[in-house]
Image 1 (cartoon, rainbow, N blue to C red):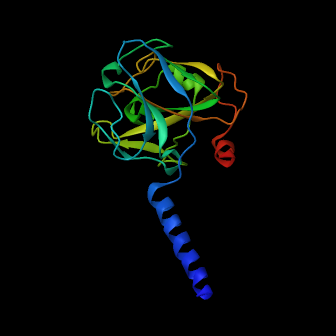
Image 2: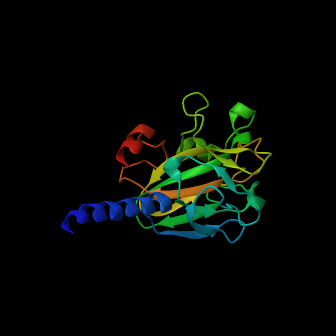
Image 3: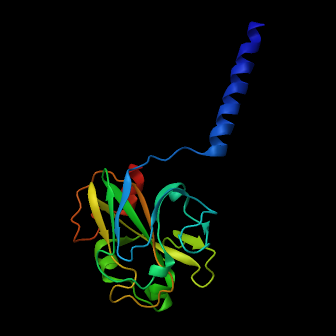
Length: 207
């Protein structure tokens, strides 16, 4: 019967790999806390954003498209009633290790659709979405008026992170609030007053 052992091992391995393929590989998590929300709305920390996930606390819109690189990422469940919020520190979160923060910004509020993003987003984050080079790096939504969130990102050190209001000047054209995604960073030193020091290609290679 010894000759049957390799077959048994093969069957066991096939079952294991099938299970992994079905449930996916767990993403590394980071400790995220919401320190303050300018409106006082009860924002929540979500464990894993996926297609089908409701992403606002006050609307039933769900994600219908997202980059595979971000599948299962932690996120802040913001409120769409705050879409016209202002201030450079409207939302403050705290992370327990260096983090990459992604902002999903209403595509209507960007130049391609005649809008303008807030200055804090332009100054502090790098837009990863590019209509020519990277047109699919977006979050698709059941919010038919918006269609997609364009993705921006920046890296921060451990501690508190201030995120501005969706309508902070010179923002224009938006109709929905942003969503915030958070994942562990790679320990890069970044000046919070400047653009992200590392390129997308460099960070992707470091995953």
